[in-house]
Length: 171
Image (cartoon, rainbow, N blue to C red; front, side):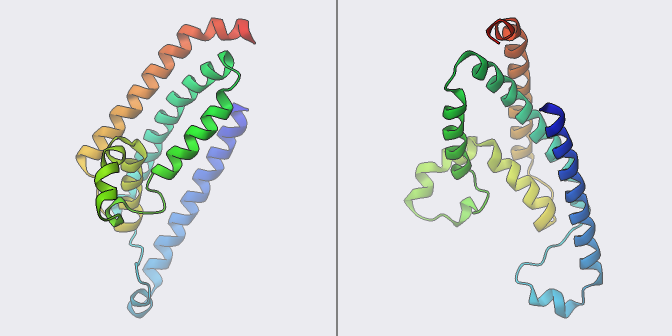
């Protein structure tokens, strides 16, 4: 299963690379009149170099969470159902399809803390900045997601190493 997922990951990286090549080519050959018709033109510049860094951070965070989920899944039968629910709620709280700045009024004041501690908020800002806005990521957001990713990886690896023999006995 792990090799199949790695295979999918490599294909996804290839597709992302082709998309970036297309965007750079299309931007360089578009006339100013064509670019003016686009409401939000995509400007791919040197800030794209942040994408491999962002993918590495995401990989570290995902691997740490996967270590913990593997242990929990081996020890408790309801783990897949609970994780499905938790990840769905987490997905809706993550600003993937909307910007936290677009939410006005009292709502944002009540949930701003959740946005600040959600690592995907900072991850999405890093990717959007590199791909869409052609800007470098903020230092505080980048340091936060690096710290959370390293912490998740270290804790996940330690817990997995410690309970690996228990999981082998359970299987």
